[in-house]
Image 1 (cartoon, rainbow, N blue to C red):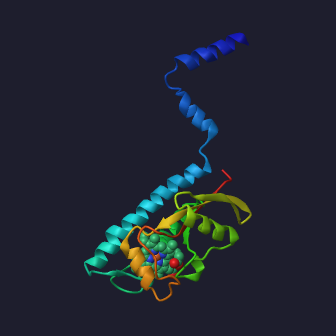
Image 2: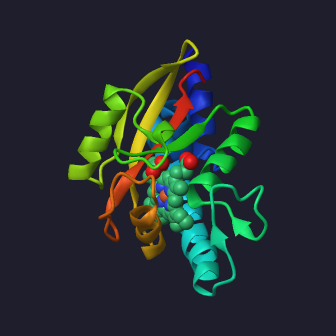
Image 3: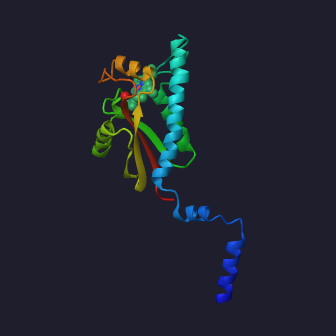
Length: 191
Ligand code: HEC
């Protein structure tokens, strides 16, 4: 018994291919908060880039505009929210069951209102502390998902202008950099 432990110890000490930090990480796993933080960073980067360097740029040049009915209407771009929803649908098709969507206390589309009291209070909390995500668990189809909600900021003047002038927008005084709503990210806890 003592002999085996000594051999194991010697292998562990001598082997350069056993970095202790990666073993520790494997045992501890990655927290769901960290996973949603990673996803948020990527989704937000795509959203900001698309809005500033595609939608705003082409609109400024007078080349095209973004519109709800972009599929039917020639020479129009998907709205930033549609870009996000379309990308979410493709992500869901991968079978990972990660899903994300935008919600707001002042939605142009009533379907983007908070779905329940806890989403409502998450949006209230994000108004006061936009830098802190609101996390918890939710049940979707009898399965537990980790949910994180991040503030969705008006990163470009085009966010503000479009929402403030949209006939269905319940708010007309959004300002640059303000949190206009929340990005909800849900990942299954099963695995
Ligand atoms: C050209 C117009 C336009 C631009 C630019 C635009 N939006 Fe929107 N946005 C809309 C419309 C229209 C909807 C509702 C679409 C739907 O779901 O039918 C929407 C939806 C949203 C929602 C979900 C709640 C709601 O209002 O229905 C949020 C949050 C949001 N936008 C924030 C932003 C932010 C932040 C930006 C900039 C990064 C932005 N929008 C840029 C038109 C725009």
